[in-house]
Image 1 (cartoon, rainbow, N blue to C red):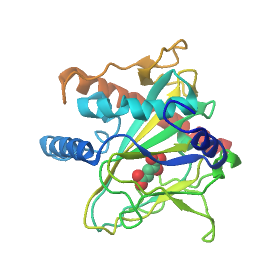
Image 2 (cartoon, rainbow, N blue to C red):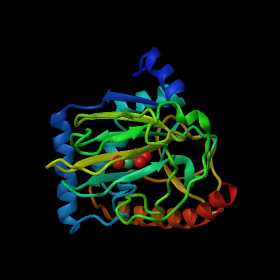
Image 3 (cartoon, rainbow, N blue to C red):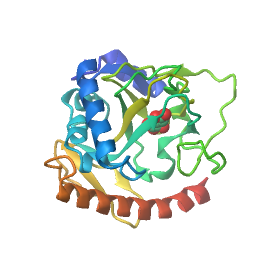
Length: 276
Ligand SMILES: O=C(O)CCC(=O)C(=O)O
């Protein structure tokens, strides 16, 4: 028995590459976070693609979610006690739109070693078959890094359009979540999501957690947030937590972190393609 996950769930993660659903907070608290997100969208005239990433660096409530004890306890059960947030993406699919996410592995352009990165996907609205929840191929993480092709469809929410082929008859599981629940998936797990056919927005935060001993294979040094334990490795510069939503230091820190992020990706994408 771990801090949050049962022995069966830890074993399922090792065998299947994911665990879902896990309870983080109540649907009522999820509504509070959603309202804060939607206020931030209004205050910012809509959030740009960059502002939807690493938003825990300039939004206090998002920082609270990445440090949520129940989420961290579950992540600790999988990767140990010294935990960094490497990245965060707020995945929003508007109602009745064609946006989708192609089959991919998160590891593809992250350049992280060893492959212990785990994504916690925290639902702020219902995420189900109709709204286009994340779908996975159970056990596919065991196949290791796969070759991805890139480009193609403008409706693909992955900005490089990276994709792997998954046969139509592959065994697929749906990680359906109620607001306040989260799923966990391994960096090598094949996953995708379909368009939102529901009348509500589908909103989730994909939080990339790594143990502090992970390294990123880019010359561009990156930053990360220490959210539990200690960092004895110094592989990343540590970002401060914001003191308030949109506080000037938080915004500066977010801009700097995103500049480094784009520079690292410009290096890592050709590297990953050459290695594939
Ligand atoms: O939210 C989605 O539909 C896709 C999420 C995803 O690919 C991820 O969190 O790694």
